[in-house]
Every structure is written in structure tokens, then in C-alpha cells.
Length: 319
Length: 292
Image 1: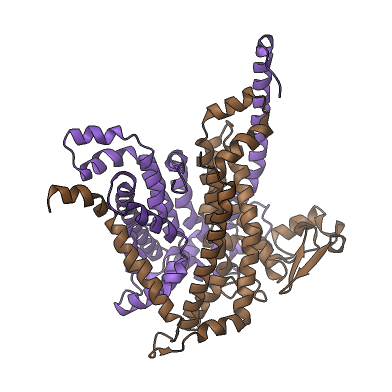
Image 2: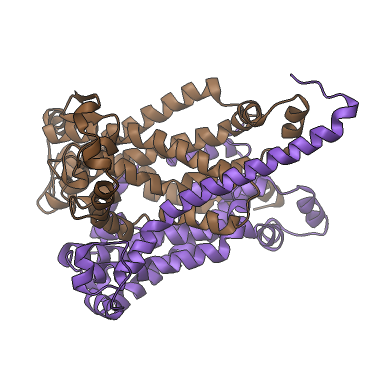
């Protein structure tokens, strides 16, 4: 162990904790998980090798295809909504307005407390008929005045009924209705936009003032500055949030677990992918199929991230 | 494109100032409306938590509690095994914050400031683990932890923290990269070793980033439902999140109590964020994203 060794390898010792963790808690289990996915095992009796049967079973299992579809729909709706919402709030919070500390706290908090407590409250607020949300919409005449069949809607594969303007439906029943539970969960995800907002805010504050000044000298107005300076400078941040949000949406668990009391109802409408995998493993003790689900999820996320990176090359600017 | 000529500069300034004021006023109004929407759930939570069962049942959220009924708090805490769950949560949260901070800061410093063979490869691997769904590694980990008798202890929920977390390492690395390099050079000339430079120079300068990571970790493990749900089996080991989720199943008609319990669980987070929020945005540096 001479000085030259330390000069060359000293830095490696700093990252050693992570390298150890990577082998113990990431790559090791990931490989083991691939092995598990080939087993018929309940963690009690001796495992039996069944080859690729678990994977074949998955794709004919109606719960599996259904949950995959529901999760994709959730991501498709929730990701754009939270991305746009958090950018908008971050833009507003980046202005020099009085009481900025309080505003930041208020917008960030629901994201932080989005755990169990918030979901329980949402369940109460969105209770059909007697719940405050329905009460307010009835009182203000939103229900009744504008009925659902005025608004075009359509039905997608899997009984997913899509309506253009949720609030114009006559009493959608929110979390208790199979047609609405998922949209309600998307609506609730708006309150969680604080985590993306913080990242955007950091990105916005990293944009140098002289770029705005230059744009102003060129005669750009607020919109011009937004399009020509803010958005291009912010693309790495938008990209980061897009990747993180997509990954997060495909792993939605807590919301669905609490809102449906762990069952994924009504009529499996909140049966998110990870919830199904969790139930398969820990309720029904089918370790093999659950591990197969884990691997399929891993590949889906890998593919989505790869697509994001590929498409991202075309629109993300690194100064 | 408007051309600015010399005589109109004064007018241009004036117009600019006016436009900025208008932007600020619009932003303020929009923010206030949004803030009402975002704060409303907490206010409802607070108000319901002080209602007696008869009034809470009506679900008239715009009605103030009458009579004022703080007994919900006592009842909820008694039913929930609250003190025990609070203690469990605190142990897990504390162990996580310490572990993540120490390990992530060290690893981040290695990635940000020190040369060693294969650094870029390791960094790329680390970034790619951020997209690995935790569920993909969960089952073998669970089986292993079960084998060595760690299920229904806090160890599966705390030990991995001491290897750092990819996301936090990434945040800290970005911050360390933004600090000027002359610092190290000066310290090296004074004869400081790597670890001394890290410990005496970098850590004190990185307070905003460390606080940000600390708060993220605190909030994440305080709210964590999935991990405790998987690894903790008996009620005496439950954390507040699991306790509240169970409470929700058992006493879901006792809204006042449910909300009182929620308020108690949420309030430390509110307090923490409010106190530390000025460091928060400063601690997040994302420039140089994408590993250029």
C-alpha cells in the first residue's frame, strides 16, 4: 500500500459503501429475482422449478393484463397533469411576490404528506352524495345543470369509460365508481405536484439573468422570454422530471392501497400493477409469479426510459 | 422586433417596470387561489379533528367544530398505540437520516471530486439503478432477510441506508461539483488528506444540500408505507403509517379520531419543512444533468 496506490485508488474507497450496497441490495437480489420467477414457491415448502410457465401464465391472467392497462392509463393521465401543473406553479413561485415562503410551504406540503393521512382524508371528501365535494358541486349547480350526455365520451378497451370533462358528469360517484375511481386518483395526484415543483424551481433559479436581459433587448415580451429562454434552458430539468414521474407513476402503490383498502376496487379499477404484485406475493404467497411480475415491470420501465432518452436527444438542450 | 432608440429609453424603463408589476400582481392572485386549493385539505382535516362524532358524521366540512371536541386526540392516540408507533418511527427515521447522509455524502464526494479508474462506468451504473423498481429486488431481499431472522425487526428498513441512495448521491454530487476547485488545491498544499478535505471543507460548505437530503430522507422514511408493510409483522413493531392504515380499516367511521391521528402524524413534517425551507431550493443543483 504505497502512496501511488492511494493516489490512484483512494477515490474508490469513498464510493465503496455504495458499491457494497449495489452488490448486496441491488444486483444480487435482481439476479435472484430472475431465478425466483422460474419457481413455484410459497416461501414455506421446497421450491419447484417450472421454467417459463410463470411468464406464460401471466399473459393469460386477466388480472395481470388488466392491471398493466390500468397502470399505463394512470401514467398517461397523471404524468402530463403533474408535469404541467408543477411547471406552472414553479413559474409563479419564481416571481418576486410577497409571502413567498408561505406559498412554497403550502404548495409543497401535500406532496410531503401524500402518505396515508392524505389519502384517508380524500376518501372522506370524495364520498359520493354525502361527501363535501359532491355537496359543493350540487349546491353550486354544477350537477344537474350540465348533464353527462351533453358531453361526448367514449369507451376504450377494458371498459374504461372516458369523459372529456369530469366535473360535468352527473354525480360521477368518484372513488366508488369503477368508471371514475382512476380519474379521481389522477385528480388527487395534482396535490402531489410539489415534489416536481421543487425541482423546477431549482432549475428556474439556475437560469442566468443575462439571458433574459438579452431577450428583452431583442424586444421579447413575457411569452417570448418563456418560449426562447425559459423552456430551452429548462429542458434538462423537464427531462429529469419526465423520467422520474414516469417511473413513479408505474410504481403507484400507496394511493391505490389506501383508497381501495388494499383490494384494488371498485371492480378492480384501482388494481395498480405493484398492488397486484404485492398481493400476489404477500397475500397469496405466490412468489414465482410475483417475481415474474417484478421482472416484467423492470423491463417496461427500462423500455420507457430508453424511449424517453432516445426522444429526449431531440429536444433536450445541454447549454 | 422593436428597435429601442435612445430618446425612448426612459419610457421603455417605465413600461417595463409597469409590466413587471402587473406580472407580480397576476402571479400573486393566481398563487393565492391555488394556495387555498392546496391548503383546504389540511384545514378540513384540522376542523374535522375537533368535531364530536355527531357533527363529524354530517361531513359538513365548511362548518366549524361546535362544540369544540379535542377529546378525539386523546381517543385516537390511545387506540392507535401511538407512543409505541411514534418511537418505532423515530428509530427508523433517525437511523435512515444518519445512514443516508453519511454514506451518500462520502460516495458523492468520491464521484464529484476524486479520480479513480472506472469512475464514469460506476457513475453510469449508479444513475441507472435509479430506474430500478424497488419491487424488482424485493422478493429475494425478503427471503434473505427472513433467512437471517431480520423480518419483523427494523434492520431491513435501516441497514441499506448505510450504503447510500442513488438519488441522494446524485443530488449531493451535483452540489459538490458546483463548489470551486481552488478550495481543495489550497487545502492540499496545506497538507490536508482527502478525507480531511471532505470532512473539514466540503461538508461545512454543503449545508444546504445536506439539509435538503436530510429532509428528503426524513420525509421519505416517515411516510414510508410499503417497506414497513412488508417487513413488520406484529403490531408492537408498526410505524405510524402502518398504524394509521390499520386504524383506517378498523375505525373508518370515526372521522374525528381518524383526522386527529392524521394531524398528529402530519404536523412534524409541516414544522420541519417550514423551518428548513430556505435551504431547500438552494440545495438542489441539477445543472450538468445527463452526465455530459
